[in-house]
Image 1 (cartoon, rainbow, N blue to C red):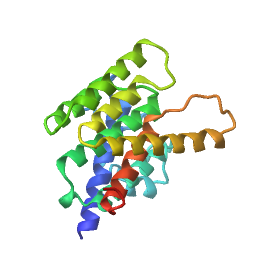
Image 2: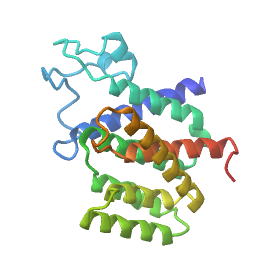
Image 3: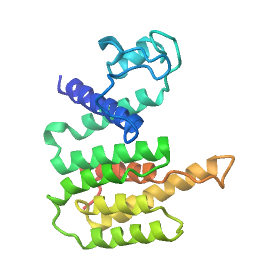
Image 4: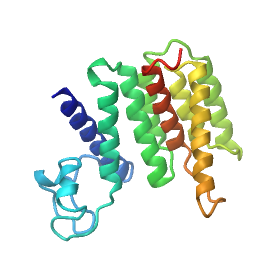
Length: 222
């Protein structure tokens, strides 16, 4: 029962975050109500159930039959699984904030190739309340500012994301996150035909963060 509850909650949160990424900052995340972007028909309750509604309607709008990207269903499933793996009842508030921040920023980077500073500031402001050390955070923020001002191989958003993680994660964990994210990025680049095309790096760092978190939960990290 708890597994179903955790999965449903995680999938529902992911569904809302997907709406935020689609609308913010150009449109309101409150109005208008959820609707099909193609025919603008308002969605009913049966069309807004995470994962199940998309499976039932074959990833198409109930009204105009326009295709709905499967990424929404995949993201909802991933978030649901993460909530089950970490167990919301045993999850610290800081871990929950980091997971939600990672998912949101990764979605923005994948979908819009942008780094939403306002969203980052909201999550980071909350994380600052629980931080025990600010030195690495300050250093990474400085690198982020330099990356914004001067062309570097890594984007400013990547540094800012790592800075937020450093408020809760220790230095060794941050190094592992960078290492795993880099490995995943390299594998992705090598598997693509157009190897010179820039890739969004925040999703790989976010994946590295989740893997490090899982390994810590399994006792593979001190």
